[in-house]
Length: 211
Image: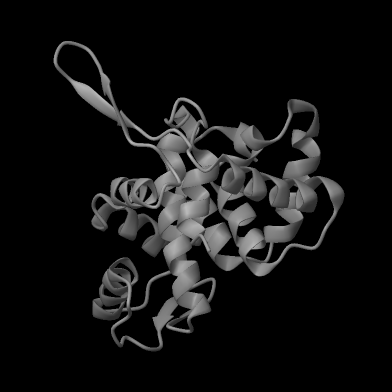
């Protein structure tokens, strides 16, 4: 089963080119740190409110990324609001996106390709290899946003992250974007962490088209 972070990356990549759009490239790291906080909340390691994130259990986890995030929050001298941690973890968890993409290539979800760039510079791209997995995620999103199905917890969280970062509108046809955004807004209006991601993104963007 894919993690929430893996689903975020798989659905945000250009399927054939293996790169991110400008919007996704700019804001997807906020999605990833938001997903980390969502996972820690699900594991009952943190308690989240609109004003604070409180560590409930700082014992080691079998996941280095979650452990690092948990340790940072537990080491903080005072409680901080969730949007603080979304932004903070984005800057302190170095190489998060790259390491996840490499792991997904190892799992045969993506292909890792080196591309020759200007002069002697090369870049790495990650075209989607497991097209079925990506299609299944898209189908789940569309069934919820455009057909009115009730989302399971993971799909609701995924929609919240994609909506908060401005990526969601690009996953549906233009004629369906208004309906999709309205549905996403209704689903995520009480999701504290999705709204924390939205606040963190809005603090770096003045593009009203996202919402």
